Image (cartoon, rainbow, N blue to C red; front, side, top):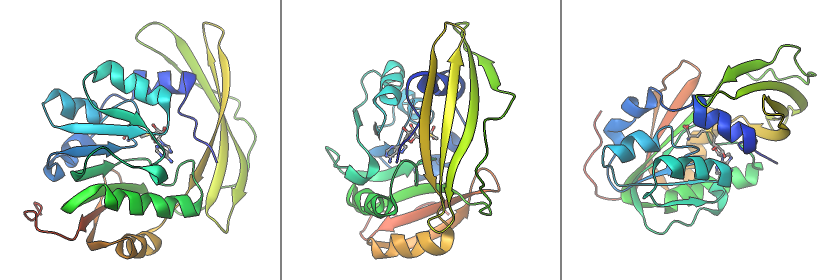
Length: 239
Ligand SMILES: C[S@@+](CC[C@H](N)C(=O)[O-])C[C@H]1O[C@@H](n2cnc3c(N)ncnc32)[C@H](O)[C@@H]1O
């Protein structure tokens, strides 16, 4: 089980993934303090941090945390996989965007939900988004044409990907990415992705202790957002 958000891939994220519609779409859910669980380079965390939101962040990749720290130097940021999340304080909102199911076993994913629950204050809210498309992964070799982009610092980075194996029973796929930069660096990183679907996630949230789970549309058709509340007495969320 692995994730590929290291080295040149972390550089790619830090250069090209600096904002997104989630910044506004998830804003109504923000009640401080906030944790961005799997914050990456801070695509969501950094804009909120710059507005003065009391927000912490964590991620399994030290390279992504380092890029995030460059942009949010005083924020509390640390390295952890979600299934070992043990934060220094409890939060009224936990955001988890584009992370669930990455680099982990099914048991670790289930443990991650329990840890996200325990990271909340009573009455706090988890906002978890998840990509849900028809499962049709198949192994394939490297594509011939890379995706190439130039960073603001003038470095060209090219990416190729390969699908190594597919587990149709566990809805899990493993990809390798090859990154080549114009300064001569050449890296390969692996990524496992488990695809979770609504009929599995809602019961998982409920048996992990969330007492109210709402399912909402995401920023794209293939994205589903789970808004799950830990039992308690905070004010109701905006509807
Ligand atoms: C697609 S990026 C999303 C980053 C950020 N949430 C955003 O919306 O821009 C996925 C991030 O999840 C992190 N990640 C992957 N698997 C993880 C795990 N099991 N626990 C914690 N972080 C993980 C990666 O290191 C990467 O930074």
